[in-house]
Image (cartoon, rainbow, N blue to C red):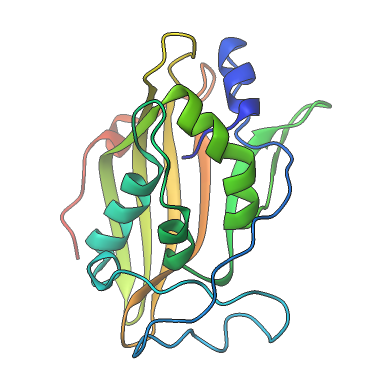
Length: 206
């Protein structure tokens, strides 16, 4: 899904690694009135309260997925609204790229939205980056939903490589008032791991 310094180096080598190291940015506090934070998701003291969400961003599965793609996209020099990204996630929500290991094989790398912002924000602004959804498959039952979203990203600076396509696996929950992102796990397409045709076409939404 999202691009970092490690991703840029890896893209040049045709090996995709999406996240590196950083320091956490503090999250803004108070939740929106009428939009309480799901209390069962993160025990007290383990995660900070997200900033208020724009109700239009969290009103539906379509809306929150669109907001995820929109918030990271922009031209060179465009400052992202990172509080908007924070507002989409439950406290304790994670962003999890599956990346190659130096010793071989692959492993999930688990980071918070704040860690992602520190590792990726400067690069997105420096190079300009747009990510769009190519296709989507949704499974939904009651207040939970899983979105298997095929993405395609593009840097706008000629100095940066074009990142490959991949899959965002997005877990969502509705608390009766709004949708929240629980986790996003993603893996980029590689020469030895091409996207199947079935993930390049959207299924009918449930």
